[in-house]
Image 1 (cartoon, rainbow, N blue to C red):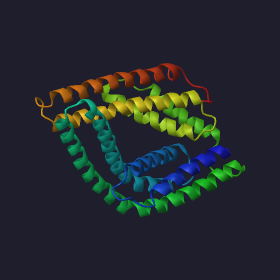
Image 2: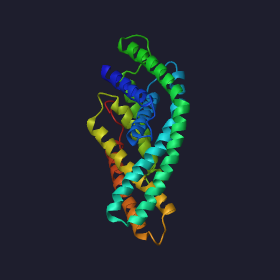
Image 3: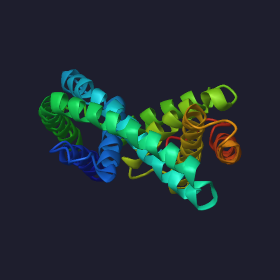
Image 4: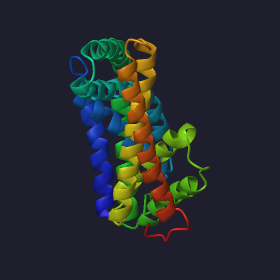
Length: 273
């Protein structure tokens, strides 16, 4: 179990590093790392059984507002990148108006992130330290054969199996529930990344689903923002291009998600995942 312990502790250290300070302007790379680190820790906290739940609950309460605020900023960073790529083959005026709206929204979201970070980071760092200490003690006790309620490999498999059951019971995929399906896939992938025995092909498939569905959802958000910002007649060509891209990405996302379901969710999985 040593590899699992190290992977878990490494994830906690990544979050601790991201919580040290908020860079000026909420740099996109830092926002992405912060959001991802929080998501990974949330997945760990959901998967690892603990005798005392208070450190985990306190940590999750402290980081949730930061995760939500960082998510808003990160989404707008992604939309800005996609819009700039459109500039190669789209009218400049429409692109500039859309980028202006995105940057304006990002500034407001960055202010919200800074406020959430300033209010919560001290508590988050304190509770993260307590959680890491307790987790290390319990995992260490389990690894040495003590009485700690740590995370043996069977428990990690059980957490992954439960996620697979939830995904297997998911209703037929459609636009309304595809993003929710992705969130479940992402959490399962984060859990399996802690497990040294995880099947590489499954991790690769989960990553593909996460990327394809995420890409579609980003384009869907961009289409929604563009229709609220641009002129239906003046910017018709740009709106049509965004709409066609969104539809194409949706088809790619559905293909990846249904491919995963067909390969991994048609029958119960063995404990080796």
